Length: 110
Image 1 (tube, helix red, strand yellow):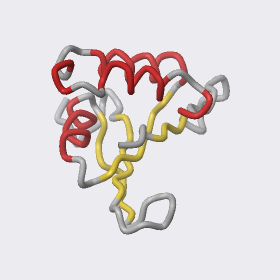
Image 2: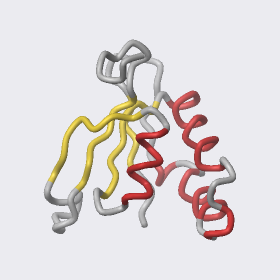
Image 3: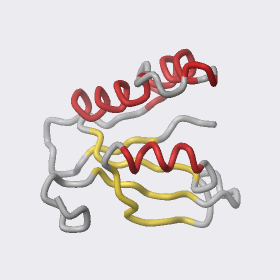
Image 4: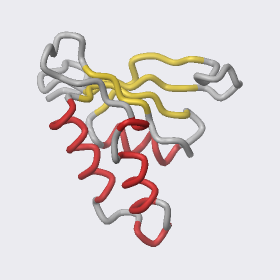
């Protein structure tokens, strides 16, 4: 599974764009999340928190067919903002566009 692509909020002038190709995300994710016996230990949440705090990552794309990943990101505070029938290479893999929920987002009831 390829790593998600993060985008920073356009309103954040100090945020840098999050690009897994230019960061340790892909390496760290493959090292800590590739073994099934390591799942559920909090490493993914810590990496995601770091991406949000350090890089201002506020949105990401995830393969809709990867139900475990979709559930993880929804649990981490993302909401579905859109959907594409094709992935970034034009292949027929539906992609969900997720946006980090605002603290006062009415859709969450919080």
